[in-house]
Structures are given as structure tokens and as C-alpha cells.
Length: 196
Image 1 (cartoon, rainbow, N blue to C red):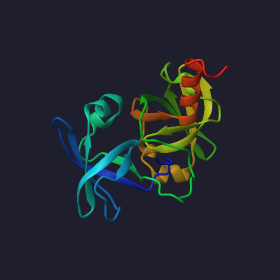
Image 2: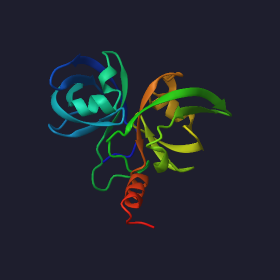
Image 3: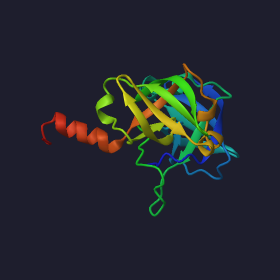
Image 4: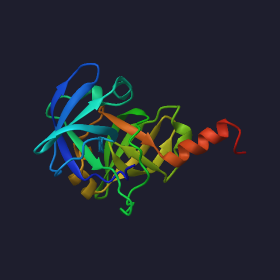
């Protein structure tokens, strides 16, 4: 479990395709625990090896289909967050690292001292989105500022732009999206007829 508060921006140093895709990611994190979970651009991946200043993760075919991981190349910057420990502050929102899919950045704008991002909204995810609700984009916990047919918007303060990769995004870029966990469960219970 994560909160969507990015702790470091790492760099993909190598990508080795195979039955699983092996990715070495360099980071300022110190000491990794074998088997620990790290959210990499919002995707929960497992540490399977390490060396000073870097860790190795493996991405399964489902991860490649559902996220941007399959397009990662050496040199790509990725938002990193280690899993929560009992007693840690929950500063963002509940994030599982189970990406729901990929959205496209439609437009980048400016509103006062903040940057706005307008993104595509897949129809299957639309029921889980609510105005002022939470969303996780490339591992960053954000608040929905606008919700429309086929799109949604978020607003980024300068701190978020400086401490994550979102400040470098341009129209046409693909981002990992995870809808709010509570919203997904409510929609599923309604579908099953358990909530009326």
C-alpha cells in the first residue's frame, strides 16, 4: 500500500525483455529488502536484486499490457515510493500500485502559479471518478479539479512539479492511472446489487 507521495525520482538504467521484463532502476534510496514493493511511476513492482544505488524489478506480461512499463527505455525518469509501514503518515490517499490503465495527456495549461493537466478518461473508469475525488497519475496522488465527458483535469503546485516527473510531461504523453480505491469498490458493489 502506498499514498501517492513521491519519495524519489529514479532513472531506468537497463531494460531486458524476456518471459518477464527485467528493469534496473537507479535511486537515492539506501538498502533494499529482497521482495519489498516499490511503486515505480505508480506501478507496484517487487525488488528481486540490488546493487549500490540501484534495484532490479521484474514486470509480468499483465503489467506491460496495463501500464506504460512496456515502453520504458534506459534514461527514463520514474517516480518512486516505498510501501507504507504501520504508523506512517497517510499524506496522500490509499494507493495500491495496481494500475487501472493508461491515459493520454490532452493539454497542459497555467492557472495562477499552478499548472493544469487535462487527461483522457476511459469510459470504464468514469464511474469511479468524482469531482474533488482522488486519482493517482504516474504514482502521484492528485485531486480532480474538473470532470467532463471523456476527460478530467488536475492541478499541480510548483512543489509537485519540482519533486516529480509530471513537470516534464507534454500533450500526447501516456501516464499510468489508478482510480480511487473506495470509488472502485462502491461501483463494484452497485454492479453486484449489494448497494442500492
